[in-house]
Length: 297
Ligand SMILES: [Zn+2]
Image (cartoon, rainbow, N blue to C red; front, top):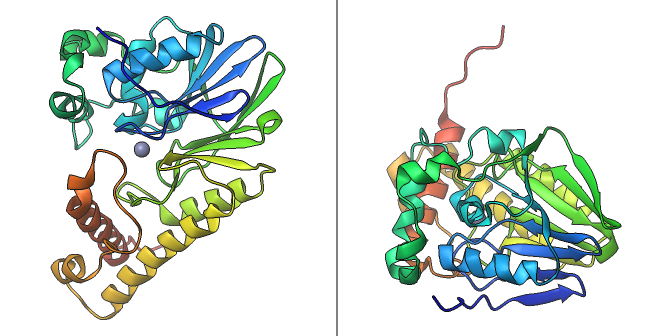
């Protein structure tokens, strides 16, 4: 099988990412004592290629996942045997959860015929996959600081987009990898999110001394973009809050509130999901804002 193209981008002398694949922006950091990988490509042939690229810089010591969504973790399978997997406990608990409403294994396989047909020969069947999906070996709560070959990795728990969301701050490179706390110049997926926590996560990241933000999706950006991400979250929130205040039904809200034309395209390879994102973003916020809460005792 020929090596798949990654369109790898060198962000700093030791930091590499790719923003051109369907899936997240998988990345790695080279240190004097091996490599730390941050998220894995969703498409299997790209996961294989990314591992090869990373290993050119030394053995893979650790693989950190920033969240539990399929596009950040499914590729872990092709990194078996390459270093220790580091997961926040809240991510680890629902890693490729077969009990999830949307079956993550089925969802991962859906992209393969169209986006990675060459992967047919390397995709395991479901039972084989679940024998070892390469979930975390090293599981933490709160934050975790690691030093690898003199390079510091602050794994900062930044819940909001997902409960186990982690930002990886590498001070020596003046870079932070935010996962999907930042969708750079593309549509933001809100569905399973806690927006209040997410805005708090942006505050935490804004306090870091960095030049570069590697987002979960979209082009590499700078800390100035954090203000844009905040405004996207607040605009969605206030538009749906206003809809609820006007007494609009769920259907009316979905029909009338959308940001198709304002917040950019959908990230690589998923343009067909535009309506789905708009519908679920509006619906999930409407559901939250109209939920009956149990009385406080
Ligand atoms: Zn993602």
